[in-house]
Length: 295
Image (cartoon, rainbow, N blue to C red):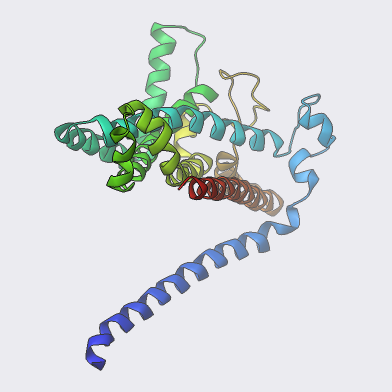
């Protein structure tokens, strides 16, 4: 009897060890960032010598602070996820409910292939599209916020598609067939029954997309981000972003004080991602609660 339970105990111990190693690794990284950059976290790091309200209301431009990079990061995330979310939802619904078995295999392989494309290749593709548009459509088109957002949306699209498809596929068959059995059309079943029930899991895909948009540097480096651009005035303006600032500071810093600002920027980026994840988690809990009431 003891020998029968031994593999289960070994698996349990191994799982706990993996969890401890993962927790320790994350704690060491966060602790290192706090140790190195915690003393630099203040309003001067974000707004420099500009009054905070003047910067937030865009009355004065911030020079030497991280406010333009923070604003650019937020705009980039909102635009990228806003573009990818409706496309990913529609594609995931098609694969889950409308596609034939052969089409699911073909399009599923394409989505998996897209998910495996390195971000630098996506950035190079976005840069090539910019050059094409500049030469053959409008000479005033240059790398900009919109091109970066479109490229990032293309990068995170597979996550949303796969999450949506999987969330709908996991709904029990009895629930999936109840509304059509009562006379509802397939569209009504998708919009009124399946999507509300799958929304909680779809939010998980959105969280992954947010994290990928917030941290990626290779794509934006080729498609519009610069070191000093200020808050973008339009979708066709260059912009700043925290990931690029961290990369630029780590590779080009001239002294310890500038490197400390890079660590501070890394902490701010971590805080922004954490806030977005917590917000998404709260939405997920609210959706779960409402779904429980519906059920």
